[in-house]
Length: 266
Image (cartoon, rainbow, N blue to C red; front, side, top):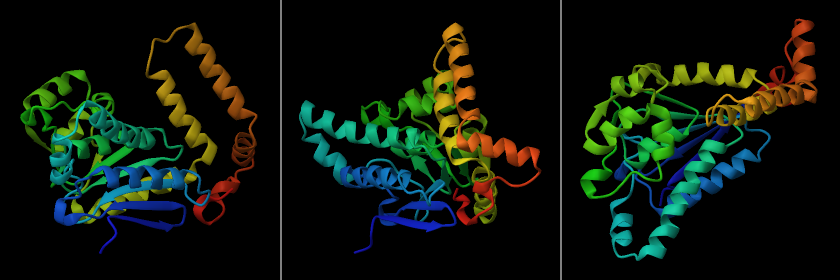
């Protein structure tokens, strides 16, 4: 039986592929747990600098597996809460991963599949991609994916697409900010390679701290505490080994150590 999650590593990049094409890469509790565990392992792998999340077959991810939904229909509140926390924590793992994550959205992304794309740092797609937050038509709510989707498309657009559950195309996803970039199918991987080239040129610790910084500065007012926090953050990274190496390399007109070796290993 084929593995429903495939991990391939090359030159500092891990590509994690949802491999249930016959089910349009819909996930269940087992796949959710496996994906979360895999991402945590990759986070601890010094050979991996960035992650690409992809789907096999014609779809990126169709959301919840129907068989899983049938099981959930018979659950009580406590079992449903435990089940929902698994999905919520998996999305949080993607969001908080210390390494950049790119979603390769080559085809339809529905319900939880939209959440997967939104939780990634960058999402790129093809014109063939379609999106739908379909929960309302099932009498449900897109609760666990909502923090990431609302952050990506804004509250106003969320009101429309959460409530209507209508399908929208890749151009609209790009306009809303759900997709970071669009490319024809034959050029999608070239676009991802170009983005990875930029990511691998950055310092490992710098990328992790930048992700933390974005979370910190986007969640509240620009008050005295936030101003002080940003000053503290830049001071800390300036005196770090990576920061000192980066500045020295710039002044000496050479590549920093992490960009001078295969895979960007420092």
